[in-house]
Image 1 (cartoon, rainbow, N blue to C red):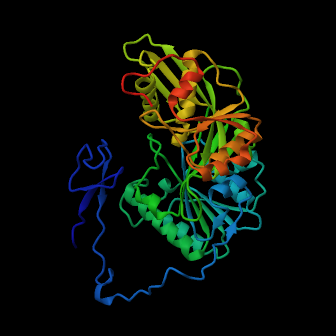
Image 2 (cartoon, helix red, strand yellow):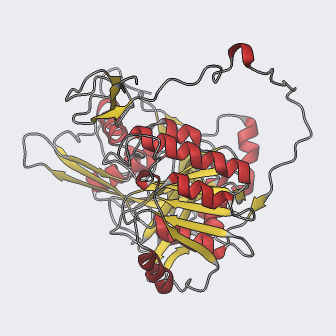
Length: 467
């Protein structure tokens, strides 16, 4: 009998080695290399070759109808998934521990009217899930509940349910395949278990939810190929110190990406937020320096959030920079532009920036709002309470146009805002498109110096940096 050859696989990037070592050369992580037994050779002819069959090729034009959708009863979840669940699709849901992933999926299973749902947990006992269901008032929902970790048993059970519509696996890192000689949660186990579960979902035609753990960096644990295997990847975000939760789609084969759904965590579970802008601005106080309202776009939805800044003289040799909800690199860029192009002295101050409500902003259109908040905090002059701000700042200080200007202004008008600081319209067609929003007085901002002038800061242009 041939001796089984062992390989050493990095649990972070799936790089393989012939012997163990402390640091992975592929991703640079320490103590992530684990010994795994290599698979034996495939039987002769299993990889195709001379015995393979020809595959059929077709043209791009066809009569295939759009896939039917199944509503979960949770409008925000349906929005993020592209309008509902598609039969045979695989959805990966990731998020920090305790953020509410299991609660959301349990509510989704209970909300699926006249559907057969199976909830399989590998992390909790059945009684623990029942306690959560009773607390949420869902204990009478017709959900098939089971606790199992062996993928062979799970696949056999799912195949014996021909009328199954939705299945939830909580979580994929706890599952194991007895054909693989490695511990649950390793790269090989996660990849193998996910492949087996996705294949049975495609064959049986039910929607599959896979709950995934995240690393300390906030990315999904396991091999990167896991995100390629599934049809949709959803991140459940939020700070446990806030009641708001954001469900964000970063990949979706059946709908738009970067779509978000907003929830509020309550004693009775997750509650949908139909108007997140009003909720994010509910505790905003007007006429306070360092506060600015940003009109952003998350997926297809306009969202207004408050950006708060605090600028204070530093007591250390190196000023501090702290950011919550935005990118630190873009904050450094905005401060550098203000100093180099406008002569605003920020280098000797500590800067603290916060996006109120726990939302994380990713689009560059927030540059101008951040600059306005910083200048307001530095000068002590508040941004007008009825004004919203948006625009992208270039390295030469110019303010560039952003997409979906009208949608941002329309959302601001709904919430009672009367003014906007926005980039100049770049063409005649854009100007015609902006006419329906005439109820909002838009001040065109062509250069960041225009914002500096609003707050009476006489930094002045440095030599050779005029616009």
